[in-house]
Figure 1 (cartoon, helix red, strand yellow):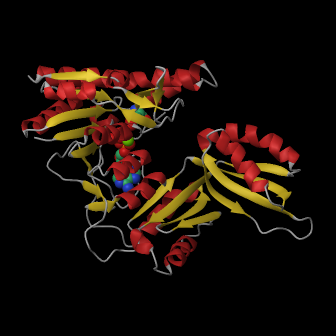
Figure 2 (cartoon, protein in one colour):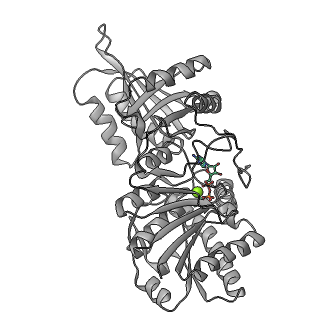
Figure 3 (cartoon, rainbow, N blue to C red):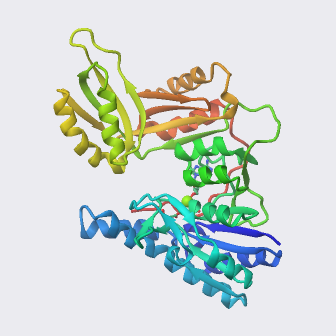
Length: 420
Ligand code: ADP
Ligand code: ASP
Ligand code: MG
């Protein structure tokens, strides 16, 4: 008898009928002879609704109160799912992060988990209970409620699986696995049977929100076998995410991802001397702002200055500008320019390593589609291009086709996109 951690996302528990279906899926795993710990997200678009509500009472709600508010969504779904399991005749108990002991850093709105206590979980497991845990939330050592960042329930599930040394962590969602790109954007995207932790990590960080990036990071670190599968087609095995893929001749590109949640910031005409980049990026790092693509232009001979451009999350733009204002003045920069109408489109694949020409193929495909590239960044297994937001979906479709990632079938996707 093993321990299986299951996680069900918002679409999977969107209404009473779906919660009863999830209860049956949990019981099915229990009847296989396993101990089951279930992690759930808030119902449907509850978290989006709560964010909107906060915006209606305050133009700048503080992060502590946002966490207090958003953490309520998951508390509703754990109680309802536990009731549904109990009504079906099985012993179950719900637990929030404080009751389990999901300890995080003292950072609101995107806290990292530092420890998951296992004593209470193990006690309930040993008593034969199904445990239903609130995803997305944590608690600091001093008892403050935190949240892990949007989509963070996946990370709750993997962290619990790692702490319990579970046999598997199954992420149940509204698609049948991880696809070569978002099947809502490209309906003939192909489902991947297997994908490596490294490729999945890149895809998730670059916008494939089927998995929270930190869940993949944690799975990789603790070797948790991770599966993404459909809540609505329980017999399908979905996608396995693991250390190394089976021996095969890799296609150079495994998937295409899009991230429309970033803005580009350019600081114009800063002096071309040592220490300028260090000053700018240390100030941002000190305030916990993650910077993504960075480009420093070739220095202008005439006045010995250059431009530094980088991208940050749209949520961090206001704080970034606040931090940059005094630095730009000190450096005599002529201007700080923001463009929030951009998107990052990326191709990812372990098969790219040592294969020349992939970048050229990507740029040619975008050029053929008349799409202008504003910034480029590369790593061993990914190439990202910044494009205008209006071009992002077309770019994904063209790249998906150019790298021959499609299949004949049309992927099935349940649930609506949030309509706020
Ligand atoms: P959940 O509520 O179950 O956590 P999410 O909405 O967070 O579900 O993630 C599932 C969604 O991720 C899918 O509906 C799909 O639109 C999107 N998605 C983006 N990229 C991919 C991809 N490469 N493969 C599968 N789904 C993807
Ligand atoms: N409910 C949270 C969100 O919508 C966490 C999650 O779904 O994983 O972001
Ligand atoms: Mg999710």
